[in-house]
Length: 62
Image (cartoon, rainbow, N blue to C red; front, side, top):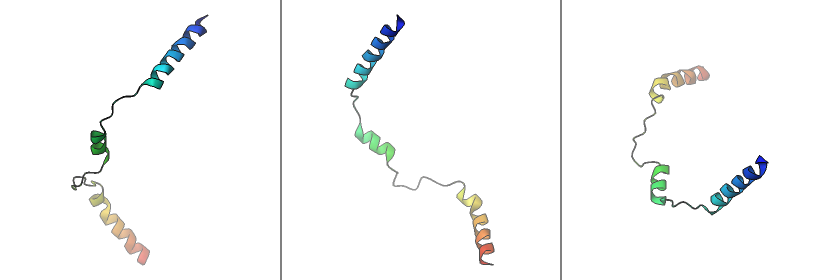
């Protein structure tokens, strides 16, 4: 008995989602997804482990 109501609800939701088309601000989306041109990003781990990379290269050469 409950299956008919459940199916009707799912059908209603599916129809609503099918016809749903939100407005998209493409300029804001592009700003969010593109990498900023300035060098604001600093790799906080790069300096900490740079010395270890140099040590490994010296061991490989030896």
